[in-house]
Image 1 (cartoon, helix red, strand yellow):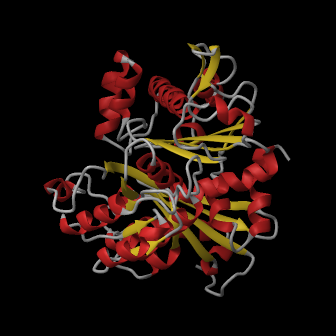
Image 2 (cartoon, helix red, strand yellow; image 1 turned 180 degrees about the vertical axis):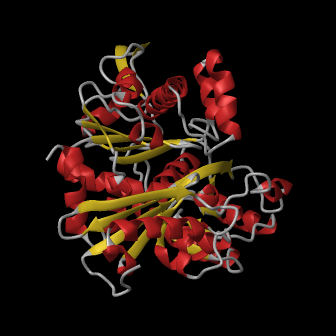
Length: 452
């Protein structure tokens, strides 16, 4: 290192991923990435060992990196695992699940509290095998019945849960819920379903982020060095979704599909047509900003389940190899082709689950169109992300993404004619990290994806 004097001109943005740690040096004035580095995430030693290797590479490329401020996000060590408890499965538990996903969490358990009493032995099962980091407790509209959600809070404690809780349910239940949770670390947020037909995720999303930073990052014991917890500002998927929101302000309606080693995430920011709401069969309202996580779809940890879900029996052997070695990198044309086939399946399934269908059904009023999921048909921009796309052979985006755009049989509400790009420089995570402190740099960073 040639200098340790802080440089206000650049910032390092780091993503501690489940497989790789990725770092980028951003020139704040120009709003562009001037150097990049990656290293396998050193989960077995100290995650900052991998970061140190990245930092050394950045300094070699640009000495200003030695004194740069650092902003980081993390999905290492399993990322943010959330258990959702709601009054009933179809409304408040489903609302909680969607909010948890938009907060950057992986939902590992959903519990419907209706019909349970605080003494119910089933509360002792909460988190027993799923090992969540945080419990998100929802339930009831504001002014409605408080009995179920208060009983759920009492049951969570009686069952032995001792970790963080975010309460985002009926405002009238807050005093009793806070009394029940008094011995636990908890945060109270606004109700995610303040009234029927409304989903309000922002307050709960902020509260979950607060719990992630205060209790989860340190609790995973990923590093013995204090500067790790000081670096991290959010869970990687939450930060990426923030970056997608920045992009949408420039590009219009956007969908991003991020193919990772363990999951395939879909982020969308789409202006909603109020008239379309009447056609939806969704019990919980759709929101403009949406994220879904497919935990069975991925390139390494989830390769075998991806291949099985897509019925690709001829790739079963290749998937086993990748599952056994998450750091696997393709070297031959055959291995690249196998990776692309697995990615194509993951993208196709993930986008369909996110978008849902438009179907003609016959009811009392005759033939009508009903829709499920998030309508992506008018999306302006489709962005592919993930190592398989960033480091693929020329034309990889066409081979992996083309089957998920245009008119697709089955009524799937997939993008009809979007511009398709790959986030090769991983700018969405960097933009999400930068936007609070350096908004102009964040906007400049995403403009090339938007075509500006």
